[in-house]
Length: 138
Image (tube, rainbow, N blue to C red; front, side, top):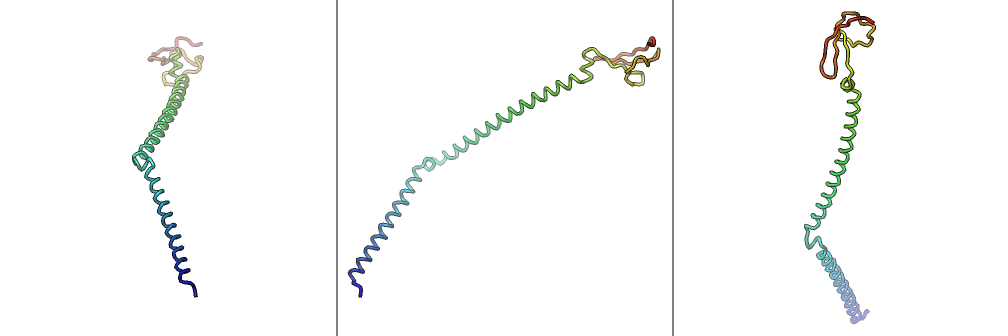
């Protein structure tokens, strides 16, 4: 038969061990709560929002700068293409002193040797038009 005093002593040891374990767990949890309370975000919850707002503003500004730089590059490219097209345009050629000669029916004259004396011509210059007639055949 087990000794009652021994059983009581064992129960007291187990109770003390459970009590120490419970106190240790409570101390640990209180320490965790204290650490959470001491975090800056818990002292001022708006800090987290402010930090994210600053990050968002920085990203937006970087995006705007990148987009503006891209637009500037594309504008320069378009200006170059426009200048190239203008240099190739018939109007640009006429602005340099050339003209377009058309027969009376509107066809462009490419060969003066095929013109007959008295034929009516339309001459288009950079600014305006004039009518002329062929005086002599070549």
